[in-house]
Length: 177
Image (tube, rainbow, N blue to C red; front, side, top):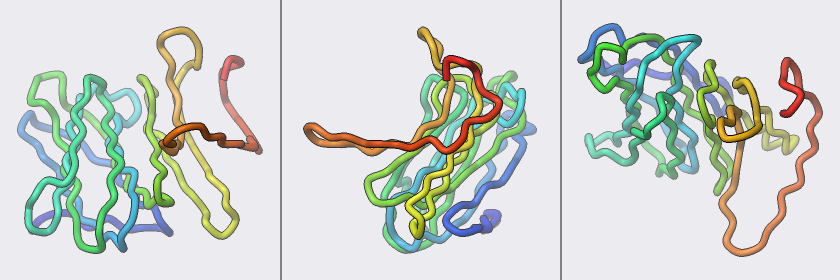
C-alpha cells in the first residue's frame, strides 16, 4: 500500500534510492501492459550496497527474484498486464547500506539486458520500436581478461543464430572495449 509509483518515460522508468538501515526494503509499483521486462537494481556511484531484488504481482505472489553473488541484481521476466511491485533490499549486513538505482524497462519479446561485473554506475537500456534502435548506457573499467565490466542487451537463441549490430557511437571508454 505504501509502494512508490514509478513514472515511465516511454517504455522505461528509473528511480534512485538509499538503503539507510539494515532492515530497509523499498517498494515501487508499476503497471505492465503485458510483455518482457528487464528489471535491475544496481549500486549507484561508489555505494557498497549488496542488493536483493524481488518482483511481486498484485496478489503478493513473488514472480521473480535476483540475489546473485554480485552487488548488482537484474531479472528478465515476462509479465501479463497488471500491477507489479519491485522490492529492493539489502542482505542485512553492516556493509550492505548505500545508494542504488532501480530501472524497469519494457523490452521487445525475447530480449533482456544486464550489467556484467562491478560497473560502478548502473547501466540502462532503451529500445525504440519505431526506428529499431537500441541505446545502451553503461559503466565499467574494461572488457578484457577475467574481470569484464559492461552493459549488454541479449536474446537467447535455440540452435544457430546471428545478431548484427551497428555501433553508432562509443564515448568515454577503454581502448579494449
